[in-house]
Image 1 (cartoon, rainbow, N blue to C red):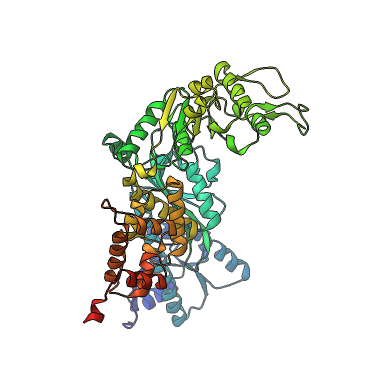
Image 2: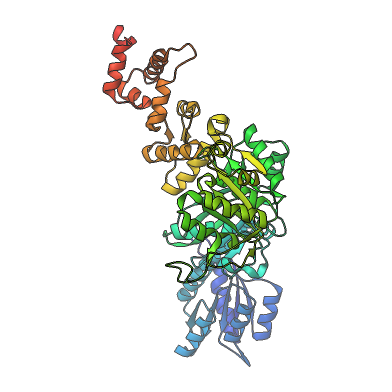
Length: 575
């Protein structure tokens, strides 16, 4: 017996020659294998029914049957046991048929002991590898099914390759959806998850989408967070993408009941003002009243309009947006109400206006304070009559549209000056929403910064982990005249300039740093505030002037002038 080689396994020998069965059994048993024999086809089937084997040697000719037939039955049963064919008359046709059906190898009679043992060891090694791979697949399948988050994988052609039980529950997938393109599946939802997968397949990088309302027909209040990642094999070849779907509905409902939601649709903020705004939007979403959104530039008026539309009964109908300040009077009239062919020079075909496109849904009129008196009159008629007239056509067209308007101007003052129609103003301000400026909700700045960092990490391919305490304090102390939009641009600036894991003061935009140095304390001593900021930076960097200058966002020459101006002394030099 060969004790130098680890051997194991059950082997079945099928041959109608008694001497050959005896030789096989003697040679293989001497190596430590457990050997069973069968004299014909039926006996072989009986042995296979009574137990499992790790390797089978079978003669090709078995009386009225053949080893090829036995091999075919094994493969139909989906058994991965390697089969080695034994033949006294090898030919190309027999060998190719055996290989086609999945035979591991074949050997010729008379059988040489050395060749027999070598092919047995090779086949059993192959069987152990197959078993390990099968066990791994079984374990992975068990893990795949045990994960509470939904998992969906697709190939490069967006064909669904697999999904787990959680995905079936969250998305409403069916077993026969495997093998179908994800875009063709009736998932009864908004489809934004599919858009994220499309971007991952196109850009081949991970993406996330937090706290999204699915708008699922069967579970309309379902809230999920999504993350996608490209799939690669060991050689680095890209072969698809996987999406993880986390059901956040219960957490979202709990935060809502406690007034602690960190986000609502695409709005970010967890302070008192934002909690009140979220609740107000939910209440307004259920009624068709016209809404006027007031707020400074960059406060998120468009996001509020989106949330109003998506939270209400019109969410399955269009949300049409119009920037009234971006179009001339003539173009705006055509865009809003449409025109017929030949109604003016360049009208080469009929054009459907935005009001008609929004029928059954919502139209968002941004920068409403900039429209002309003539357009104000036309809009007033739409609000009064609920119908529009296309340019060049006197036939009125009924429309069922909810109007949400927004402006950063003081419309009451414009009414007093005669620049805005009073009757239109009161038609628009049935419900007024005043959005808080960012300086009025500075407690939301940390979560906004985190949100924008995650966004631009994806967009720019960076891995910024956060900002330092000093940098965050500077961001919170700044007044943000451009509001959330300006903060977003500031975070983008940080990610472009910061190549370190954590951003510090010198990565901040210049206007934030200048405001930090020039801010005066209540005692009215701005110079003292500046002196303390410089001294703190010097102490933090152990009086390393270059590092302190970077921390403050100024150059070294300026720092040296400040040190001399404030007569700051390095304790190390004094000693």
